[in-house]
Image (cartoon, rainbow, N blue to C red; front, side, top):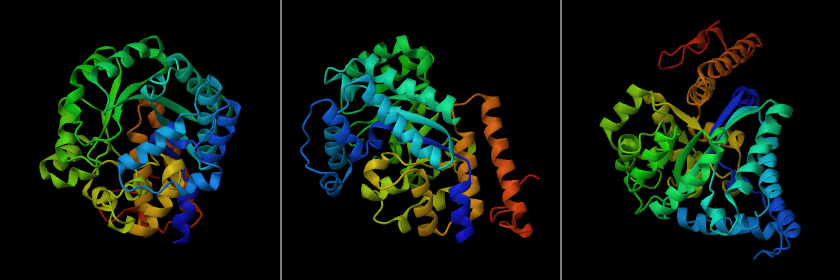
Length: 359
């Protein structure tokens, strides 16, 4: 499978499900904590990594929020974003759509402007210096009140040009999407796009609520959609993207092992599934590591990798021309890949009959 691994490494990619706070590596956590004169409940990088043993989503969130406590200054938010962008540049990611959790910081007294300005400037620098395009999505934490979410939405309005959309994250259990109907209605009225975490630990019903009551354009995770045939039919017919995070799903015990993951099942059924890293510092890898791991566990071939990447480009919040530019870039890459003899002529079509290359 060497050629598939080579393809994964070299193919241009987009990432649509990444929490920037979840990319805070232990080394940078210690650096920022020292700069801000803060102490950590850990004595070394190794001790931090040993603590990354989670039994469910909530056990992860507990340490996740403890780690982000070091983020205080605009430079901190710039540094964490820049570090993530440098990593994905090395992995041939050419577009990313980043989540951030302002409530986790404003509750600690950090001004909204401090958070978003640091992130925004890092995104601008990556565009200018590395050619990585990006969009920023603000997430509401579902365990907090609707009133808190609405207040956060109003705080975001002065920065409307920097933020493409709003989302919904953190623990699903006991916090259905419909809880946030008024907030998402207001966000749509203000011109934001909407997404929501649904069907990760929560049921397929939460995906229905996100689609019908929050009017979302994408579902983050969504792996439990397969429990509802009518829902799967809708998702396929409308090509509603699912931003799946394989390593995260296993780390949080959504699946017991990658070999049990339903990504391949969803891809073969025609769902618009994509591969992403979620919180890579905590879950064992960035986007390439997720592709590599799931490819090996599910025996994905080059056709599968191609379609997963193509899905991600089609699922972006870029405008029509920008999206087509990425798709053209992908087709050019695949054409060159074929010319190198890594794809046989007979493999022009995949097992579903979908064209692999248009050359």
